[in-house]
Amino acid sequence: MAGDNSEERQVRKIVVAVDEGEESNHALSWCLKNVAAAGDTVVLLYAQPPRVVYSAMDGTGYLFSSDIIATMEKYSKEVADAVIQKATRTCSGAQNVKLETKVEKGDPRDVICETVENLGADMLVLGSHGYGVIKRAFLGSVSNHCAQNVKCPVLIVKSPKPQH
View 1 (tube, rainbow, N blue to C red):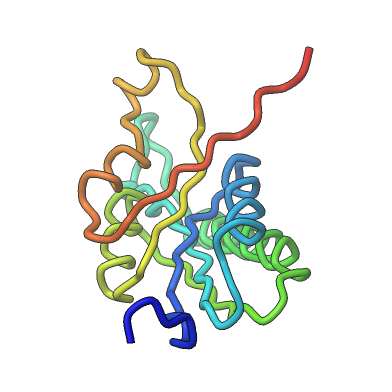
View 2: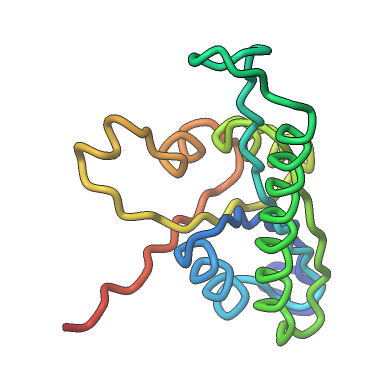
């Protein structure tokens, strides 16, 4: 019957892109408080930047040893682990929400769009870094790119302006 509220709410899969910045942590907190509901699955997604490919020699003619490359890989993994741990701690108070974590390597714009598509997500939540026009023109905006390219709704959460 129309207007009957006894129907169960559809549970959703919400992807929240997280990184080292406070903006993504704020977006996650906001999402948990205002969007996520009991039964929803929140997927914490960290896009790990790809390892810079070095040739056997750098510009000065020195060889990069396998030790140095292994150290860079280890550091990259530690950063990813720290980001996911921080985001998971932020979720610790969320009641009745299923939590999943994903770390994918690649350009954040591509990783986020592909993961949202592959998971069949119902919503994507991103923090806004608040770059100005010039910086955004050079760096590109991950949130703009994702908003243009994913098929589900995109929520971009701005961080509150600091009080002076």
